[in-house]
Image (tube, rainbow, N blue to C red; front, side, top):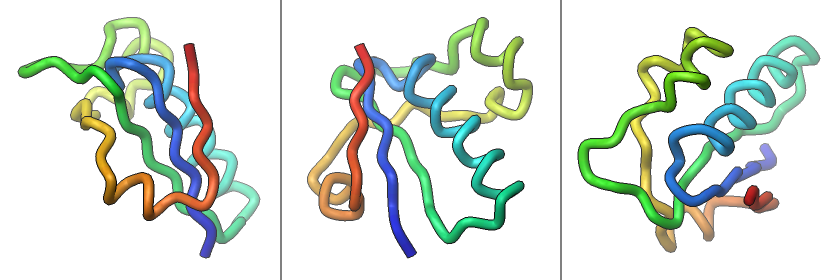
Amino acid sequence: MRAVLFVCSGNTGRSPAAQYLAQAWINNEKIPVEVQSRGTNVRDHSGPDRQLVVAIPSAKSHVPTALDETAIQWADLILTMN
């Protein structure tokens, strides 16, 4: 199975939006791909952006996660967002 990692700075808006949208499409098309998202500058006690939760209600449980070596090694493709 292939793995795609979306990365932005805080992992509260852009990369989780890409993760949730990609996951919905992957599930619909039944494609064997895993997706995750990470941030390069995740702040303590941060949560998902309000705009993200309004656009994608299922993202309300998203927990911003920092980019680390494990995630980099896991991914076959890393897409960055700025």
